[in-house]
Image (tube, rainbow, N blue to C red; front, side, top):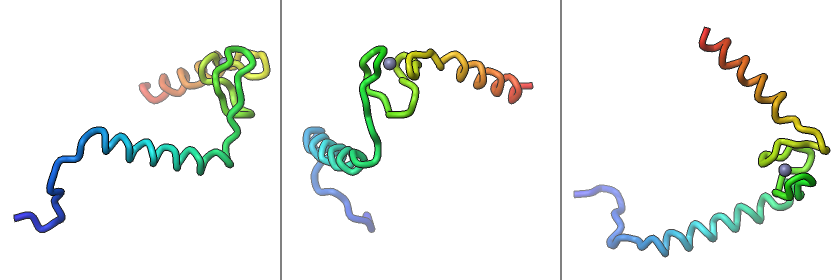
Length: 81
Ligand SMILES: [Zn+2]
């Protein structure tokens, strides 16, 4: 015998989806006032303001993707050695 509450019936995926959609929308509304999402000038994808674009790796018309990638590669090499 179970000593904890057990659901009587299986919940449908549609019902779970509806609940998740409501949760997502609530979180989105809560975050809307804190983060500033703008459109990327280079590729048009949504990106955080004052941050490099994650889709194309540019910031203010310059490519900043390669500098970050080199730093992470150095760190990995040090950890392995
Ligand atoms: Zn972009």
